[in-house]
Image 1: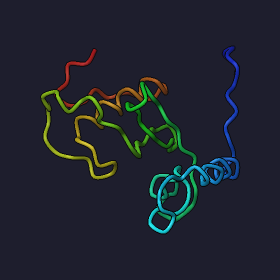
Image 2 (image 1 turned 120 degrees about the vertical axis):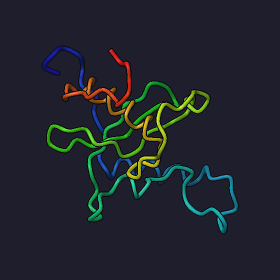
Image 3 (image 1 turned 60 degrees about the vertical axis):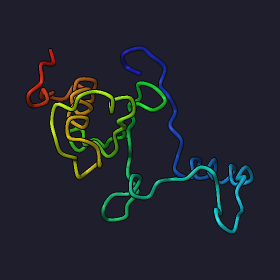
Image 4 (image 1 turned 120 degrees about the horizontal axis):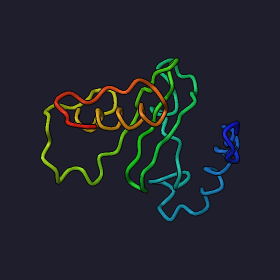
Length: 131
């Protein structure tokens, strides 16, 4: 990479599907009830509204704390965000985001994190005291 670290080679769509297919033999379930692989490519995340496969990015903090997003021009658009570990906290705002089906305050928090990390203009979540 231009700033020094080694690049990470991404897998192609066909390489990814090949891995999913290889896990088919590890499926411990009754194949008549649960056919296929124990891994899957989630259609509603990996394809846009026109059915075209799209480039996804992920940002993970730990195994169950992550966000999946796309870059639209110079904007980060969250597709899926985890809310693991946050349910025990008082929610500062009511409502759920319709695009990625999480509470609004969780999406706003992920949006802020991703905007800061990607160098986009970061907007503090409404009513927050973020630095």
